[in-house]
Length: 226
Image 1 (cartoon, helix red, strand yellow):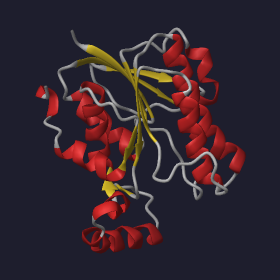
Image 2: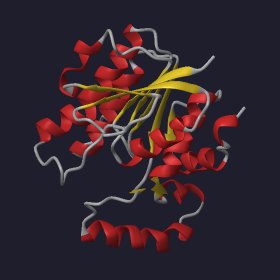
Image 3: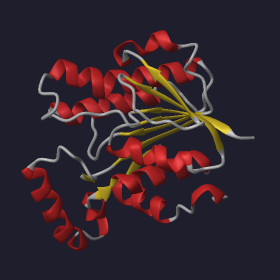
Image 4: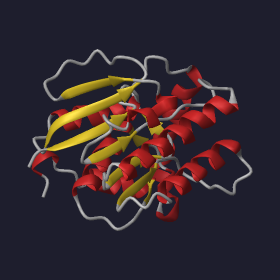
């Protein structure tokens, strides 16, 4: 039976790659996009829900599906105000997890970040860690938290320093071996492939470090994946 998936953050770097994969995946008949503005995407599978993501709890009736993919996230540069940053990176994913639990959705896959730790003294690392902790607390049977290192994606607003960092990581990646492999940069496309594979296979690990995300992506075989 074809499935319905919810995507939060479908217009972002990883979310847009995920949407492309699911549009081409015959296991999915409907994709519900929850976002604060219209994506402009027209496709028979797509159902857009333009809502206030800070009040996601009001969308109980519409928030029904077989799976939830959460690609919501911001950066310090885009959101310098810490209160707003926390509402985005913690508040929205956790609210989505609570709705998923309430509506009996048993698969929840979310993009976090490498080093996420609720006990960290670094605000941004701590925020991701608290997000992970509070999502796992919902007890959704199939929960996967992806912890990528630097994400490489085509962005129209990419800044000079980000371009430099991406170039440096291309040179450094081959040198990161063994336990350091998890610090290699990874493309948004490969993160998206790993998300789909996790949702459609049995995988016992809840936290997925960057090197394991890459391995999952390497094993992704598309819509006919067993």
